[in-house]
Length: 475
Image 1: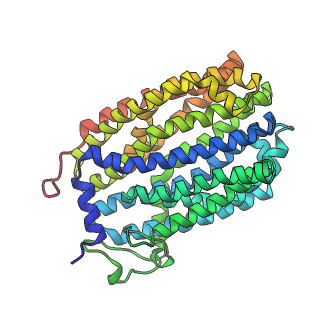
Image 2: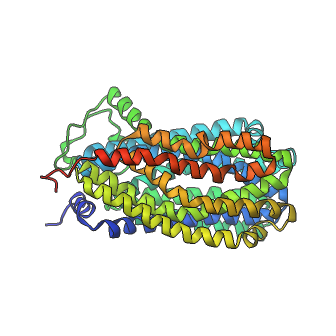
Image 3: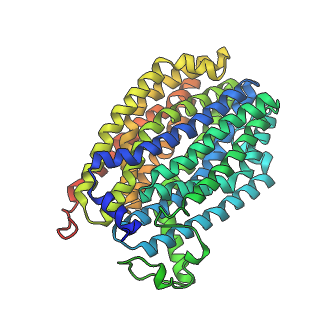
């Protein structure tokens, strides 16, 4: 008799060795993030061939993409946090309801954001930090991103649910396919058809829809425990045949739907804050940088994209820890949660230190490749080196947020998620730019990264001091 998918996956998530399990789940996520950030860098490189103003437009629209990712990660992490714990407790029917509810809510959010953004395109681009010279390029690029909004938001949801199920390899296939298509699309539309920045936007839009279609298909291969269907939206009871053994009560009705959406939003609030504040901080950064010209906006755009590319290596390993944490917390195997966290912090710090060292050493070369403009390079190089140094503190702050979010302590996770791009960065940016001018803009983010890491320490000490022992029966 064939072993059910949920039984096989439960055994893997609760018994496989922690280091090998986290690496197995983290490696596909790391590859996915590397490819995703690589095509962002490729976009920046291709657009940088046009002009400094066009290069600045990618930094402006980066704030818009952060808004879409904020919505996607809120629904994806919010549902995924519940899904991993429900699967750990063997409540598969309820997990399917969370998956479908989050998917269709994200689809509606993507359509809404795209429609409103297109209706208010010029004011939106100015709000994001466009100067008069950047605005024409930003309008074209933002139009394509807004048309791709439904695909971008739902892709975030599907990617995260696959990860929280422990199926990171399936998520990797969808994201890597989209990233590779985007890179080839940039070359085709910009160099082959000479479409300029419109070609970069078109390549991004098409690749996002293809990636979303591939991710959606992954949920219908029979290898996942969840899928997306209106019948799983909790408006009526699920048939007994669609429930797995050990399922708890599966409520239905408008009240159940509202309660489920509320729980998704609360659990996803740390991701919304992190990504949303990332968008706000990008707007403020561009607003301060434009006082020093298009070269400053272009330089900080390059720095942000390069450092995001470097950090995604450590972040990918951390995201391999999230499903392990949530699943084993739901199964009451708390020692595995503890072991997983400390392995992730140690391994992530070693890996990101190596990449940060290379980033700092070759900062001038990277900046020159992105935009061979002496004014841009003069700003980008010291800012990039400072931010590479501060990357060493980011595994601590990010993994702390991931831990608390994955086990349902959304209050602590939300507070910590506001630190890097909000509570620490925004005051530093505004104060240092007034006191120090352009250098204050360049070094605000590195200082915020250091402070965010330090703030997370007391929360971790308190949590691990009070973490219970393993449930005897579960162990």
